[in-house]
Length: 124
Length: 234
Image: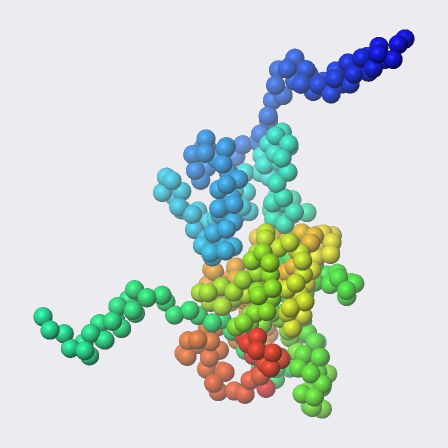
């Protein structure tokens, strides 16, 4: 076999391997995202569409207000009043393992909230 | 309408009172050593603080983390200050929440700052990059560094308060989270002989201000000019 053929075959093999995840995902139906939603709650502290796209921004805003400005009270768009607290407000309804972690894993992001903040459902 | 000079000044003063900034508070602590020494082995203040704030117990003294702890009198105030009556006596030490905190001056990220409303020296572990300049600057050894993940050294974790992560500095916060809901610092609340009094030293009617007027008080390393807000009474 000529060198040219070996190089071409290896290149083809490499490209096939490297692009395998794309082919595989394109071939099958999308993997379902199975989230454990809070039971008995239909509304979050803000409209659900906003929370889906921007909960990270909201949490960073809460963090800065609480830590830097000493404010603790959040008035939701619907007028209800909540404490700005990841552990006491968000995790009051949401489960870290079944909700936060599952979605973050699904979209392959690793926020470092939990290196300090503690899940009250499993405090280890 | 004519207005007299006196009335004009009174009006200005009233407007300043009504619309001006509220007078900033200056939170301070007075520790009555005579009361504290009723039980020299007592460590309730440190236990309560460290349990409330998830402060780990790390056996290696080079890596230990402490928010409030006890030190021999001569180590806290200097050999020359320790007469035979007080030498060796344990003194509770914590962050002094200084008037001119050197740790704040050196912090390159603003992770530690002096809160204008009440003078607390705050700590934001989110912004701490672990450079430890503040630890070098603090003349009181009030700051600790997390050389490793503290969680393995915590027997119990209180989810109401975050732990810290490897690579950040921490210290006493005068229980800012408890003050926010109108409570006293954990150490003050738990102290069996009520040796610690906490309050607004800028308010002459506060218990701490009255104590500081009535009793002889002293502070650690006053000559450095940091202006500690933890006072010791004898």
